[in-house]
Length: 375
Ligand code: MG
Image (cartoon, rainbow, N blue to C red; front, side, top):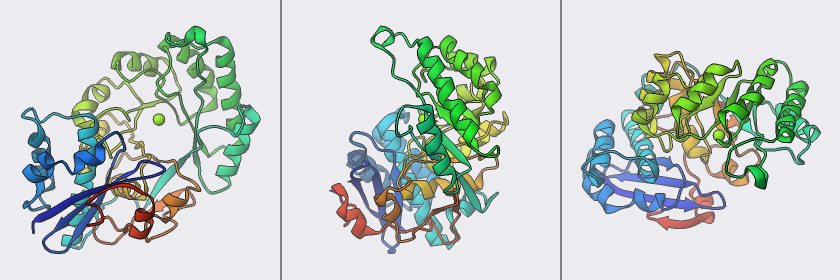
């Protein structure tokens, strides 16, 4: 079997990047790359496709992953948009390999630990900036079957603190009031997650983390900027509130220092940019050596979400998978298979390969820029 074509499409309004890889035996693979400027152009760049993919057997996935990295630079070291593009192609190669072998992707990754993937709903914010509004939204989402719920509670700094990462006393009190209100209204067994989006100094976010300790959060995410693992480790070691981070790291090399320093209690790789599914398996295995759970960051369309679900099924230390698109009509109709998330869970497909199919009519309708995806 040989690869004959690599295409990509940028969708709208959310800029999802879908990837298609075609073969000479009529099998087509689908993947998704983390969105970002130019990612769909990188997916179809001849330096990647002509040098590493066209004419090659798509089933040698790990070798092609390495060939893709070396095709664009002698160093073979990539982060950012290039690694996002490679990640989306890698997923499509697994889809092809699974279809060609007659088995699902989770089987290719070592078999499954579970049939259902627990999904948390990211609610972003309340409808108003009041504790009552946040609590009301949390209760409504819990009522739709989710037993893990996340909110962004990262008040914007005032002009005074715009660049120093400090949190005003007012905002510390606000953080605590909102999170306490949400925690109080949820069932005891519903998990609550809070995202702080990298904004704060260790000393100030620790004031918040200490106040959260008796609220039994599943985690506080990205308390400090992602560039300094020692600062992250300091926060993690100082509080009983679990700390989660990881969506800004690429490949197992990017995660190595974070995991070895045990700088987070939970890691959240984004597999649509961190290197795809086999690299995700390797990152998860490294984390498991330190007994660290994996809760993937995920803002993908149903294609990337389902691809990552196969990985979540196949690793022992999976905890919970992110989901952002409740009531998003495009998310809910982009695959032929519908209702992929029910009662806060994804049922792992048993069909060969990815196990879901793009509804190309819907994809065409929301396509912003097509680079050979519909060929
Ligand atoms: Mg986040």
